[in-house]
Length: 213
Length: 217
Image (cartoon, rainbow over all chains, first blue to last red; front, side, top):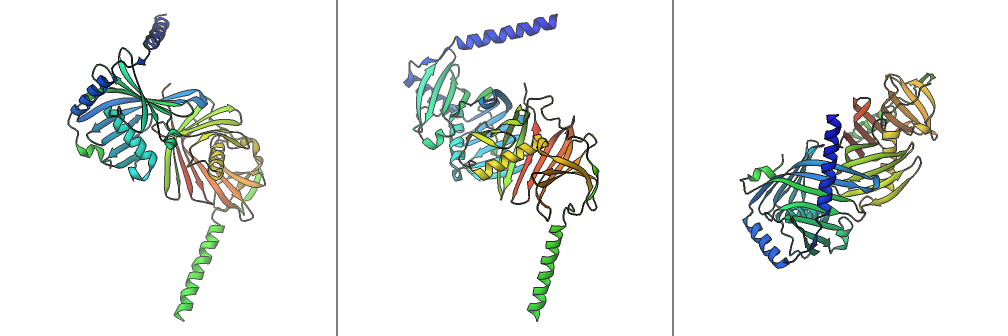
């Protein structure tokens, strides 16, 4: 009986939380210039970031969502490593214009510039993690906010890129101006939502971390 | 004189390689032993409506990797999505028993040759085209254990099965020389489900490696 009661309570809390989320909708940002200034100031102070991430990918074609997890490391100015740990092992490292992928024990290196999509995703991820997208000329941006977060709704200008990504939403915490969520929506309506948790800024990270062997 | 010996030497090597390639699989002279009265068994879709595979496709030195999601909509209809580890979609496709319908596809993969090959491979990997295999007979190729040979659209499928008739290997064989078009190996079984599947094409350079994964529910 207790077990059923626990399940019922958890369900109730989940419904309540989703209600709270819906009850806190984003509206137009009141002070865009102030937000840009403070975001820029925050970016100036960031030298590194370590965090865990949870990635939710919707599959509208199958009416399904899949969740993968891992950790991320970022070091100024252009090094970033995404390491997926669950349910598969996969590492993608962006290191000074190179994309290094470790998959199934094999390491492959690519020049980010050799592939337009690689370069696009590469630049986008680094800028998004930095929060350094507010003045981007590659997107039209709508600025919004709710009680907890700021939101930059970014639409790519490049028609080719729209084939892959229709919209990118970057959520920035009001508390510390750190990026908490990046949501990429595709033309079909499928989205990939990456939430960054346990964020730790400015701890020393060696360059070797980004050289995948 | 030196040239003649040199040419003969290479001619011998060529003939040796040619003969080796013709007799490689030993299927042509396989001895038919008896009729196969069983049915191919599959544990795909028994407990899960969707199967996910970490998938890598390599062809002519190029490699593509991502997550392949396969959902059975009807007994012989599959909904398939392939997307990168970071979530960007490659394609969504509906695969029926004899055709496929692309819902969306990135331009780099959107060709009839690529998509029809992938659709056919996926159909073989999880459904074995079981409804279209007929006249099964137990055969013994030269220097090999028993296999089951099925007729498939005027060609042959040679299947290595375990005791429960679950396929361990399928070899698609065609023509009077019994050449192999492609083979599929099912390995690392857990609860009758293979956690590794390898597809290798012989007519062109293409290999697909699938590793079963489970996303949390």
